Amino acid sequence: MNQDGVHAFKRLDTQQLAAIRQLADLCNEYDRIILKLNWEMLQHRKDDAIIAFLSYAGGQVVGFLGLYQFQSSEAEASGMVHPQYRRKGIFGKLVRAAQEECVRRNMGKLIFICERNSASGRAYAKSAGARYSFSEYWMQLGGWTEAAHSGTLDAGIALREAQASDIEILTRLSADGFGMDEADARDYVQASFQTRSDTAYIAELRQENGEALPIGKIHVMLEEGEAFISGFCISSQHRKQGYGRRVLQHMLHLIREQHEAAGAALEVAVENENALGLYTSCGFRIRNANDYYDLDLPAGKPRTE
Image (tube, rainbow, N blue to C red; front, top):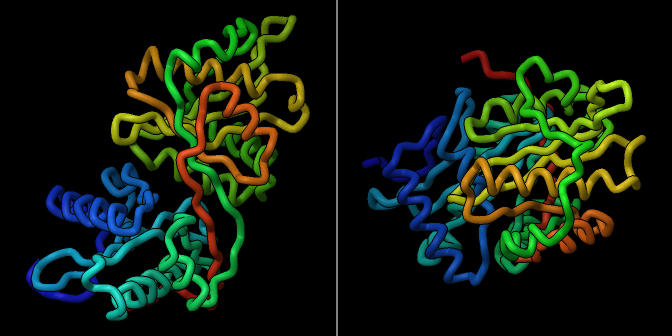
């Protein structure tokens, strides 16, 4: 890229991805943080929506902002600026470009992902008028041996890989499990099918009549040689019966046997003590925390030009 300034991209080539990774490594070391950049979404795209904004100076990538949409009404954003190019308004320009894109798509909210130890990230979110929403722990599996000792597999529980024909089941489980309205739940499910390595599984309970009853769902995505678990929920009527642990044990077994991942990771809301206890007992350990800040956007309509 010979032209300096901010540019939007629907897809990133190998050279751009390498430049982003190099910038991330530099910023992580400089700030002593671990940025959440959703590499899988950056690398593999199935739609034509803008996924990233890059700021160039002297032909080099000095700023980055990723735009990740899981629901039609909002998008998440995470980014960084080269330490030597900070305090020059670069991140503000990246954010304004992202805001314009969100308004063009009729989104009402932009959510900043801020690594808890990033002082500059917190300061920017505050200066932009964003309000704190919630926090998540990023947890990593301590080791497959520890996971294997977390319990035996329950033969009455099975994980079935979901197909496009299961969208309604997944939508219902997501709405019930995460307290989402049906439209947002469907957006979330459909977005997962747009990511190449995101595989959804339906947890089924074998009943006395031999039929399989869907009681939950769980997703796994291979990223950087690690299996990332997400979208895990158990239907409200089957909670507090030990099914969460059994489903997670099946998922860890499947990851180890079929996905050949070197490890596993997941995110959990800081205030979700029950889930945190479950994951810890299955061998997961807290690596770092991310705070989320909501920035309301003005109502917009798609441009006609």
